[in-house]
Image (cartoon, rainbow, N blue to C red; front, side, top):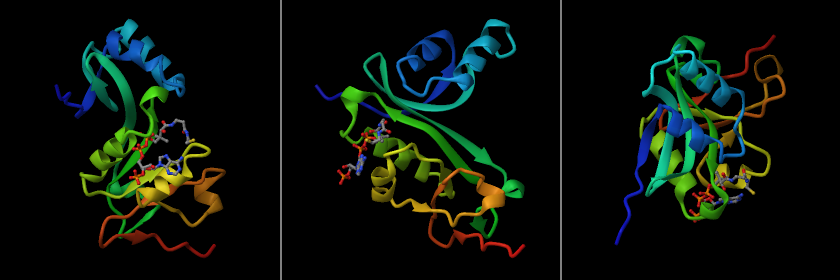
Length: 162
Ligand SMILES: CC(C)(COP(=O)(O)OP(=O)(O)OC[C@H]1O[C@@H](n2cnc3c(N)ncnc32)[C@H](O)[C@@H]1OP(=O)(O)O)[C@@H](O)C(=O)NCCC(=O)NCCS
C-alpha cells in the first residue's frame, strides 16, 4: 500500500497544537497560538503559517512559512515579496528520508526568494538544497546568520555603504 505524504497547510486547532508538542522547537509561538485558541482570540480551525506532512494520523514534519511584503525586503535584488521559513523539523525517526527536502521544495514552488535562519548543524542540508549564506550585514542581521535561496533572475541586495 502506498501512503500519500503530501505537504498540507495546518489549521490552528487543539489536535495540531497537541502534535506540535512532539517537536523540539516547541516554544513561545505555539504557546501563544494555544492561548489565543483558548481565549477565542483565534477561531478553531483558522489558518496558521505552518505546513506539515502526515503519515496516517501523525504529523512527522513541519515548517512555518510566512510571506513578507516587498516593502520590508532588505535581502533581495530587485526588492520583492519573499518567504521567511522557520521551524523546519522532521521527527527523529523520519529524518533522512526526504521529508525535509519535500517541505523545502514545497516552499520553493512559490517561485519567491526564501530566507531562513538555520539551526546549528543543519548547514549541510541547506547547502544541499541550494541555499547560500547572506553577506553578513550587522545592522540588518544582528547575530542572525541568514541563509538565502535565490530563484533565477534574483540576486542578493548589495550592501549599502554606511
Ligand atoms: C535538518 C532536517 C530538517 C533535514 O530533514 P531530513 O528529512 O532529515 O532531510 P532529507 O532526507 O530531506 O535530506 C535531503 C538531502 O539533504 C541531505 N542532508 C540532510 N541532512 C544533512 C546534513 N545535516 N548535512 C548534510 N546533508 C544533509 C540528505 O542527505 C539529502 O541529500 P540527497 O538529496 O543527496 O539524498 C531534519 O533532519 C531535522 O529536523 N533535524 C532536526 C535536528 C537538526 O536540526 N539536525 C541538524 C542535522 S544533524
